[in-house]
Each structure stands twice: as C-alpha cells, then as structure tokens.
Length: 52
Image (cartoon, rainbow, N blue to C red; front, side, top):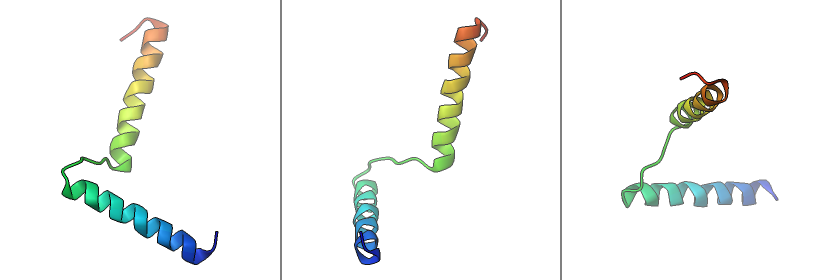
C-alpha cells in the first residue's frame, strides 16, 4: 500500500466516523475503552478467586 493509498483509507475511515457521529451513533475514546476493559478483567479475576 502506498502512502497516498493509506492516507485515502484513513480519510475514508475518519469520514465514516464523522458520519456516524452526525447520525447519533456514540463512539468511545481510547481511555473509555481501556477503563471498560480494565473493569472486565478485574471482575473476571475476582470471580476466579472468589472475591468481589
């Protein structure tokens, strides 16, 4: 993939995200996803060890 092709692909992906936002589809920041996954992992570990 050339640099120009990569830039066009990124542009298309960013436009799709903006379109989703305009249509009311909620997105998540990296920090929000990380926090969500950390909670899932913590809960999973607690269930395995029998604590909450």
